[in-house]
Amino acid sequence: MTIGIELGRTNTGAAGMMDLEELLATRLLVQGNSGSGKSHLLRRLMEQSAPWVQQAVIDPEGDFTSLADRFGHLVIDAAAHPEEAMAAAGDRVRRHRVSVVLNLEGLEVDRQLRHTAAFLGGLFDAERDHWTPMLVVVDEAQLFAPAAGGDTSDDARRASLSAMTDLMCRGRKRGLAGIIATQRLAKLAKNVAAEASNFLMGRTFLDIDMARAADLLGMERRQAEQFRDLQRGHFIGLGPALSRRPLAMRIGVVETQSRGSGPSLTPLPQTAPEEARELILAAPDPVAPRPARRPPPAPPADILAQLAQASATPRGPAIRVAEPEPSPEEAAERETRTRAILHEMLAEEDAAFRPIGVLYQDLLVRLRIHAVSGRPPELPAFRRMLAVARAGVPPEAANDPGWPEAAARADGLPEDTQGVFLLLAHAARQGLPCPSDAAIARAYGSRSAGRARRLLAWIEEQGLIVTRPAAGGRRIVVLVGLAWETAPGDPAAA
Image (tube, rainbow, N blue to C red; front, side, top):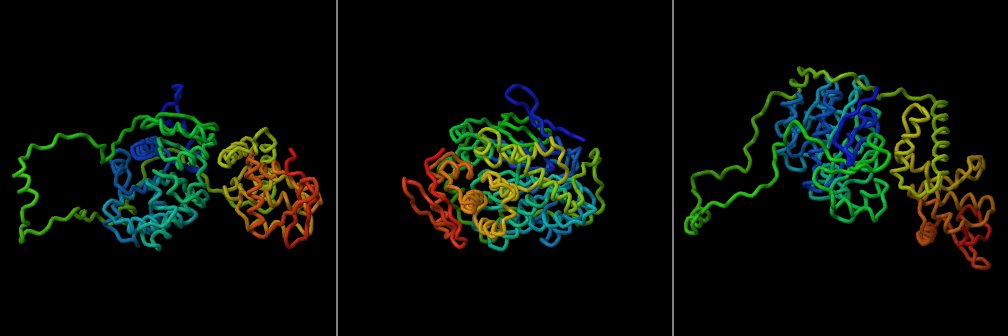
């Protein structure tokens, strides 16, 4: 069953649709500076999908509590409950299929991280019988999955980052679909952001964030400037749940409103200087206590009792995503078919130079077209498969008794450089001419010969290879420890 929800309208006036079933399987990343309309987009997405799927919102500012009035979400005021209760609440949320908003307003940052980690842990550790589909929306995700340490304690940051990584990397099997929104991609942990296959990019001004957004959408760097010109509520989307090519859209209207509002100009009161001095600098009353900055919230009823008694609003037919574990034979057949489809993709013109995010989305679509059942490879596994495919190493190379040692050495390198090392290892093992700069660049996914030379020098610095010159300006590469050596090859060859 396919369920489409309308996010808004494209530039051509057509409906901007999102495939909800595909979203559950592939996750979503939203980026935009403050005021770009991220919260409006998340609210639209949750309102449109509320009748169909259970939802949980991690809300650091209490902006989404209004969903309770219109759609029946249960609001959990985290400040009124200890950290230990959050794990049990997360488990019961899955058990009773209640849509919730975890309101973290009123908590200091350290406690926000701890409460969120415990709640996500409860969702993640629920029993298998309760692995029904669920959207988990995390606003201001850079707070809970920071790229670097900040003012928070190390143990709180580690706990929150671990929970967010589990949500994005391993949540799909448990029916959890992460939707994360951030103001700054550069501040969001890369291993969390990399697991999303759908992207909606809004107005962004900093060069580093524009460059990362363009890379994720498969756009040229010179096209990144357009992110500065986007209006509030306008986003560019890409992904298997949205579109196979970058698609500009304007987000539609929402039924509920945020408790916060944008700044508006208000005339200053007409206060005489003498009166202002008296109001501001008057000596404080020694008897009157200093007012608290924020009154403590009234303790609500026990959250676990609320969850136990809550009944889920009818949300339409369930969408099953949990799958049985495949047998070894089925897994091997699936991997063989996946690799064959990947080789077909790379055989297309310029396919080897497309960004990894775009290639991954293309693979997911092709797997569905070819009816390859079961769970597709996760992004880290896809990176390794892509590295080998780009290197052009034939499958029969694995039958060589010495090849496992070369593959083990490649595993110690970053995923995007493993293909280059395997390309050199195959040429050296077979005594073929040393690959040219163009061949090395292609295995790396680039057209830059200079980048290929720098990469070759970097691998040599790691102590894995030695390059030496040969007659006629050619070069030879020797694998350290294996004594495999290429024949002389022309670096400038096509």
